[in-house]
Image 1 (cartoon, one colour):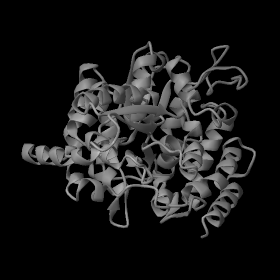
Image 2: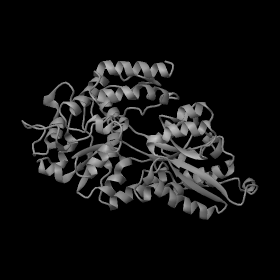
Image 3: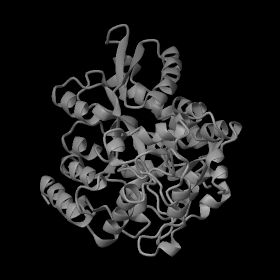
Image 4: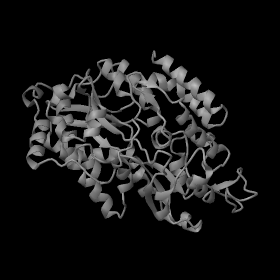
Length: 442
């Protein structure tokens, strides 16, 4: 696993630049300036609480309030609050949504606020993702790396499957003989009578244990399967998921859910993004494909032996998606001097390291990333599969575009119908793609 290593001098210089504030102008504000910070992750919020406690010791004239808005409501509330001038001073934003806020003038230009050299200390892939029109629009906070498979050791061993063999699993939409992934998932799916999905008389109406998760989950499932079959999700900012290879991959997922019954139904997962996570941590699912963002959740909730393996390999190999999160400054804030100091702290190795110290997330500041790896090493957890899948050089781009949210609103309900088996895959994808591109004006 390779990481960019900064020299000590470069890190010190970058940190000094980031933390240098406009103290003189801040003295004209009230004795204590309160800066609000919004995000959607409760687990990471705990790490931020410790980080901001240290920041406030160093900056007693600034207080930072954390506002956690659940993912299910985050983007709707963000749009409403930005439009209503009631948005927090700093907020998390991802690659799929930031473009529209850039074009609307809602985000601070990080280069103008921090200086052009600040980004040298940050994870390059995250910097690239959030650079638009040659301008960086957020301070990198975390790096999601790739997708891997969590597994329940006991359930695999009961089925006679060696956890070491998971790294070799392959899936194939055209040749069942080359598909060892579905075979394993079938052996790990059990009904209330103890029969597996591969056995005669298996009851899909009384499943007590699922082999895997194959839900309509863009980052963990949809993009990796599309990518590993040689398909695409977007072409530029336009949606392009109705191509033959993408349709093949999605049809494979839909059949595995609705015909093979090796994964929870769309009725359970379409409107509950945590259904599969909860099923895994409760010992009701043997394999759980997801990202680093669930590592802390699995570690804290699973009371059985578990591990992490490489994701299954498709016709084009193992193809993952990388992602990142940035802290964006609200361009409309009236507390720019204080916000600048907070952003500087968030972009420093010292401030960002708190996200890695308790294993919550891989810090977006390169120099702080060892805290994350050290934490999980002490826990006896091998996180290399999440990084190895990215190191192989095969990735599919994360969704993007200034009008992505408009397209998403149109394709999302159709995708849910596809995964529920209520709409023909090819026809549904054509309909969803046409509706999404019409919504973004393409």
